[in-house]
Length: 125
Picture 1 (cartoon, rainbow, N blue to C red):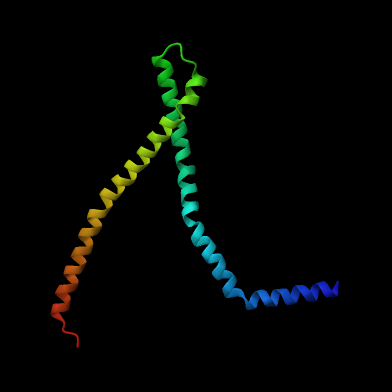
Picture 2 (picture 1 turned 120 degrees about the vertical axis):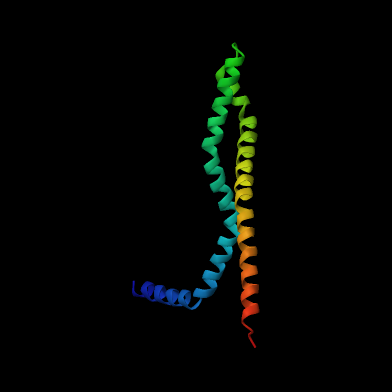
């Protein structure tokens, strides 16, 4: 038992010596996995919206075609619901960028102009 405790202490000491390289490796793994994690989060957030659109399309088609079975229609509208969900997400993303980029660009150009004016007032050597 004492030998196991000694081995554990030696192993712990080696881990502490190699601490930077271990965290460097973990940092590389996390940075490589970031796009996958972001994609999973987006898919997780869009899934309820897709299910809502899928049910709505199924109900609408069943209402238009009186003889259509809901379960059969529900299975067939998966791809159109997915396409509508992705288009909705991309439209929302473009809209947010459209609303956010011009004010940010205007503020940046104003800051640059202000810096140029102040630089002209004070001569630094």
